[in-house]
Length: 539
Image (cartoon, helix red, strand yellow):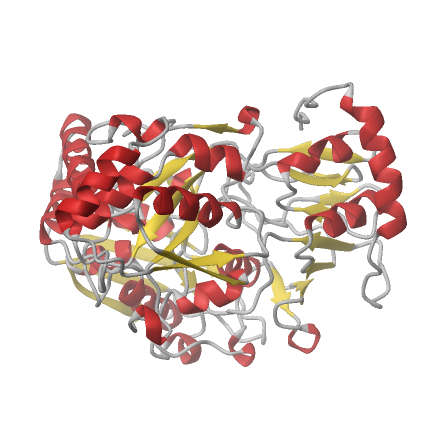
């Protein structure tokens, strides 16, 4: 695995001095004895929400991949592959038959059955935007025997396998039916963390927001194919993985440098020279396509229930200032006008304001606010303070929007609190909100069906912010029915023009977040999210 090149060799001397200081101040870790087979990781956030169907928070999704397996999975070519099940499709394309692999076990020792898959599918489809669209075309799904699931379409739909295999926003994780039968509005508990995936959740060691422990599931049987993104063999070579939360970037860096942890998912780019000066550290970018950062507005309440004021916010913001604030080093970011990402097949600049990728248009924003009769209603902007990948955006956005004439109420909180609060549909002064910022890896936004921000189903079924947009939904439906790549490209462009007009969301550019790990860890996979199968410890 090729390390990223250093920022400047001249920085290494200073970095070594900083590293020495950092080693002195490293925070003592937990009392659990270090084992040769244990990998200790600091992720981008602490984990408090354990239900990967109830939230689209990446840390909860990543937790889901540790303990739950998926029916299908997506490989590095964006192709769906068998995971728990193989499949066949009828000649008319209307009936899909999924056959479970032999010997699949839950972590409590019971057998995985087709009834579990049906229950999991139904809970997933009630929440996920792609699953909702798929269900519009499903006549029924049933367990036709203990190992076989039959899905019958009511109308032609070409993206069945792609939506069932996609890695986000909510992956189709398979759970025991007794757990999956719970309402999607009922949060899964610690006791519900029973999967069939490569790792087992250790409930007794769980400290919400601070520490999560996973142990190798000895009865897991990986597929034979080589691992590729989230498909292929999930071969576990370590006994135990611990996620330890360290919200302070310098503390986490110190811990990696001294060997107290093994893996740091998202070190600050500013601190990379310190890590790159240490020969025992590898710095690399497992998520090669990178991520898109964006702002999301709440359509339910003033001021953003007014489309002209949403357009004023779009004009006030710009990618150049946000990316410089978020990443700092231009080696790791680029402006991009496309809602689908600039390195994907549907990349387009259609409908994007010309100055979005430049410095914005403050004068135009001020005029729009005046014309719209903006009355100074405060914009309640949620500001997470404990995650370097989402902390800077609200700070610079608040400055830019105030310059345009908005009144901004910047409210600091931790990321997990934001993840919980963003689900509130209450008014902003009663626990709700007006605006927050988030990030998606490009494989999560690369077309209108998988991009959760391009969902126009409103309060019931839409993603946080809840735009009610029938025209948007009609174009998504047309995209799903299109029969040629040219037709899909045309619809995707028209859809993006419409989304910019309505300010469905504000894309704020792309960036890459390197990870860092001790050099005795090998085999770390390139994938859209961090996974802990396939890796080995060489010592």
